[in-house]
Length: 111
Picture (spheres, rainbow, N blue to C red):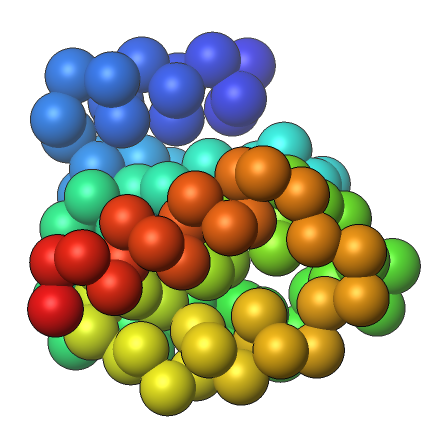
């Protein structure tokens, strides 16, 4: 239910509602975390940057090696204005895919 609602909010440019809904979720899975990072990227403010950093520090370690999480986290960091953190994360990723490169290139083109 939460996944569908968050996806709907994000697709309809209501990222704030998706973020508010996230606060109700206990033990979010990879998909929910990915959706949160996407919602934060859509808003791109310092407040969302703070949330992205807080959540990324508290997710299970196994999530950090997930390419979908890596890509959405890089995208969120870039769109929220922390290009250095995005670059640092990118540099730590051993196996980079096209989407991860794309997130970095897109973020760097909007600086």
